[in-house]
Length: 192
Image (cartoon, rainbow, N blue to C red):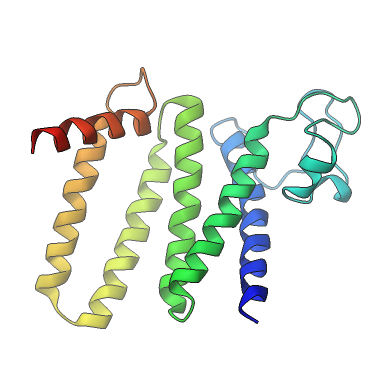
């Protein structure tokens, strides 16, 4: 029965990943998030057979069914990473439904942020705000469990230091914030 739930979260995560691709592509373009998916080359509206996450990309060999133009592998990768990440989160937090939901939300936000940042070398403010709201929900959950305001405040302060550290790493727009964050982390760890 346990393998069944791995499969459910893999499929669910890849479906969410497919939607995350829509968010990544249409964010800040003026396009609606609820419009039909279409080929970016020929404009053909995709049929239901072309919308299966992961599988459709493999079956179509990364090409449009209508015009045979190349479909970026980013779509496949985001769907696969989302599916595998959802499966991992389920494995880690299965009996803790609130933590499971919050972590799935956070993973989804991080996928969008990472891919959008790699593509555009910027993290939109609305995504940062959503991560902040999610962090507040985590803190509320933690406080509800511990009822220790000092411990919750300490954790909040510690996490805030990490946010400031990452913000310091992402101020330059010449490279992706993720690349700069890792370089800065290696530098700081080398000094300790």
